[in-house]
Image (tube, rainbow, N blue to C red):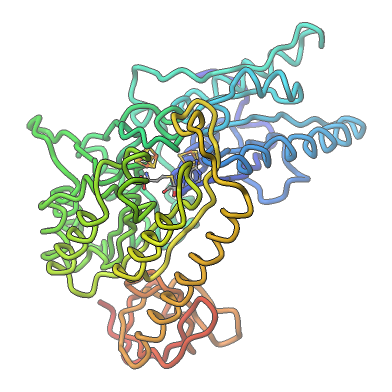
Length: 468
Ligand code: SAH
Ligand code: SF4
Ligand code: F3S
């Protein structure tokens, strides 16, 4: 590592803005952890930052355009800081950086560093190199670009968070166990921005989970672009799937809840379904995107399964865990999608019954097979289909919330509520729950009777103080 800052100097401030999925949220914390030994403290105040990192998302067109407009604003801020005798370093990380490294440096010369998700352990070193550039004549300055997929294990080189930092991050934590994707759905950039599927070794995952629980974390969400494709090796060199990993994590005393996201229907194997049947800590809420209900479109999307296979899979999962609540992702307006195809999508939503779902208009991503397909769907058609789909999903979400009224659910109380005297937490089905209660309840799992619903959340009443 490079000595760029001695600990005797005043701390510098890093502001990290996160776009995109939970994996980026996890990665932003890892970047903060990597910078901490070099004297950088995180800040939520852009104005006091010495370093700004944009952790970007490339999944849809608007996601990357946001980054360029943000860079425009940062250029102004940098100008103001320089006029006042200060300075601001700017780094672009994440999936836009990975996909468009050189292009970002060309289009936005204000950027000091551009680096992809596989390079975060090299961040302190990049920062030192970028600082050296500051001593060069402006005409010779170049952004430091690192978008290689390294041979070494990034995770083995990233320092763990300080315990006080993990404590401050709260009762729930993300833990990336798998990165990258080999599926190559024809609409999706992820295989290009995150690279091939790689799973972290079992011991590394268990170590990180133990450290989190030791710092007070009660609920861990395992992350991966295709988390259920996890295949880590254990100490004996054996291949361990996500189901078996869940059984190993369940042995950690103090870990109360386990979740994972995002899963691909093709990787939902018997071991994982068995874990849902046998492990009470594995929460009955599954994000299992299907994207479309039309077999023709599923084929064109390269999803490699049919609508009927998806529905049969849901049946199998529900017979193992009858109260399983489902969530999904949908794309409307994939090239060639007809009214009949779209009706098939509405039908699979009705047949499945979702507790929640995310839906998007198809966005053409350069470099993906979908981008070259004829028969792109006109924008107004996409808009109309998206509205109809979201109306159906909203009805289902409302019905699901309403079906919880009268039930008593274990709620992990995480925070004080919006109103004085209230606390808030999450049900097993990831619903926000608000109730009257003392702050002492925070950190425990409590039996809460659901007495009503409000927009996007449940209202509850404490039944017992017994923690699970
Ligand atoms: N690995 C996950 C999805 C990761 S991307 C899976 O296979 O399900 C998150 C979601 O973004 C996808 O499920 C999809 O619904 C949406 N998405 C991805 N590419 C898109 C595109 N080009 N246009 C619109 N939505 C897209
Ligand atoms: Fe993208 Fe498909 Fe991989 Fe999901 S499975 S990340 S949608 S290519
Ligand atoms: Fe976006 Fe990259 Fe996640 S493209 S959705 S940040 S994997």
